[in-house]
Length: 264
Ligand code: 2HA
Ligand code: ZN
Image (cartoon, rainbow, N blue to C red; front, top):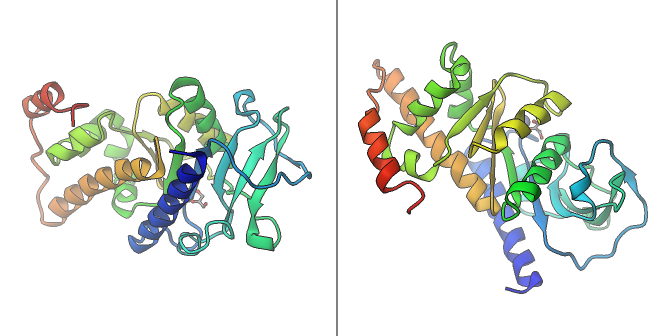
């Protein structure tokens, strides 16, 4: 695939996924944000350097699509360059330049969660450079579970419960979900907690806030969260029907790990 074909596919996928986030009620007002590392971009570099602190060094010259702060996913689904931007991190990592933004209007300021996105993008370059996408969204049922007084304090139990709702959850969220304790949106603590969880998990739940997924592309990042949210929905529906879900057994889960996980 040429760079151009790859860009077109990446941007089409961002539009598609932004539309799903809105349709599902996971993206009220400006809820959620997206970043995706691009291999190259043909647009002109605007000379002005926008300073930004704490950019990891291995992001020097990285090119990213990033959604804009205050921008609605339902708008981004129609006009990804009006409500998001392509930025290039400067060589000395003191800031970034715009390559594409605002369709002739004033620059779109990147999402307030840019710190978390850059932290994760940096770790992905170091550990698993095939991973290019970071998606943060507000999936209703997963957020409900992060309010559960016991489950929210017991990540291993929550992870196993999500896995045990249906076989697909164990198979298609192979590294499972982690939950990080509440930290203020857009803050350095949230970036740090998220960065620490990235190595081992497919979905990171932000207590009483939302979820974050990573993947080789934005569709993959969405799918991890989507499958986990289906599991959360099953748990809540069982509870609403008046019983605690029995869940697949430890033997069932172990059998799937042996036979299916990382094989489909
Ligand atoms: O971008 O979701 O966490 C808006 C948010 C902040
Ligand atoms: Zn959020």
